[in-house]
Image 1: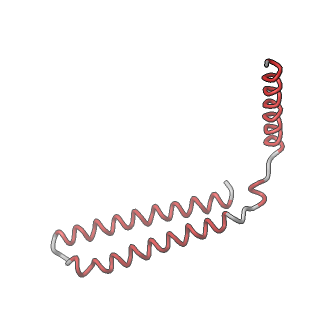
Image 2: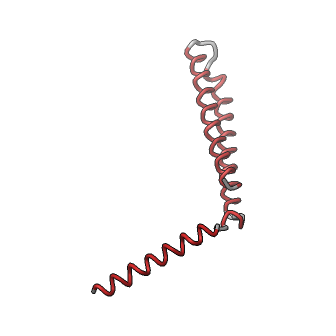
Image 3: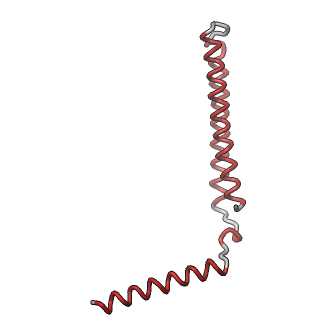
Length: 105
């Protein structure tokens, strides 16, 4: 797996983890509000700020990943001899099929 793929995977994992933490926090607060142990007015603003910070953090990670993906590592683009041979064989096969199709016409 390339460095870029690892980075993208890490960003996605982080976003998923943040979503899960956000869900857990919301559920915990909902339970406390339902039990009247806290007032929604007391925790709502703090919860909103927390979720906003998580969202902004995720947006920054996505922007960073996008920016880095534009600077592709040449190693990620290199082809093995086997890859090159496979591509060459596919080109030859297509060319042969086209020539056969022309000769049938």
